[in-house]
Amino acid sequence: MIQTKALRFSYPNGPALAFPDVDVPQGSLLLLSGPSGCGKSTWLALVAALMAPSSGALTVAQQVLSTLKNVAADAWRARVIGFLPQKLHLSTALTVQQNLMMAQWASGQPEDPRRIAAALQALGVHELADRKPGQLSGGQAQRVALARAVLMQPRIILADEPTASLDDEAAADAVHLLLHSASLHRATLVIATHDARVAGLIPRNPEGKTGFQSLRLQRS
Ligand code: ADP
Ligand code: MG
Image (tube, rainbow, N blue to C red; front, side, top):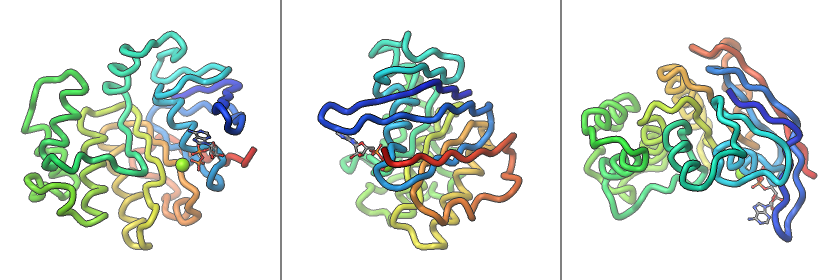
C-alpha cells in the first residue's frame, strides 16, 4: 500500500534527509518513531504527495507519485489520504459540521449531511456539530479532526503526533480511536510520533489490523 525506495528529501537551506525503505501492506499499521527533527512529518508529507522527494521512488495506493502533478495530486490526496495533522487546522470561523462539509467538497463529492453525522457519531462528537472549534476541548477537537480525516473513507490514514500534549488517558484514547477508525474503514494507518508512550498503547494484535511494523528514524 505504501512502498518507498531510496527516498531522500532536502530542504532548501535545511537538512538532507534519507529514509529507510518500507513496504507497508494494505490494512496494516506502521509506527513511525524517532526523535524530534528526524523527519517524520517530512515523510508523511512525501507520502501524501504534499511535496516531491529529491530522489527515490514512492508508490502509494498503487499510484506512482512521481507521475502525479499538482492538481491531480490534490484530487488524489482528497480521495486516498485521511490526514490528521499535528496542528488540527480546523477552520475557526466554521462550525464542526461546516468543517466536515469542506472536506467533502475538497474530495469532489456532493454534500452528504448523513455521512457527516455518521462520522461524528462514530467518534462520539455528534452533539458538537454546531459548535465552533474554539468551543471544543483539546480532546473533542481531535475527535472532530479525526472524523474529518476518515469522512471520505480514505484507504490510508496518516496521523502526525496524535498524542502530543495529551495526558496519559487522553493519549490512550487517541491511539485507540485511530486504530478503531482505521479498522472500521479497513484503512492502512501510519502513526508518526516521538512520544515513547505510543508503542506501549498499541495492542499486540491491533483490532482489524493485518499487520504491524515499526520504523525508527534517526536524526541526520
Ligand atoms: P519530525 O517531524 O520528525 O520532528 P520534520 O520532518 O518536521 O521532523 O523535520 C525534519 C528536519 O527538517 C528537521 O531538522 C527540521 O528542522 C527540518 N525542516 C522541517 N521543515 C523545514 C523547512 N520548511 N525548511 C527547512 N528545514 C525544515
Ligand atoms: Mg513532526
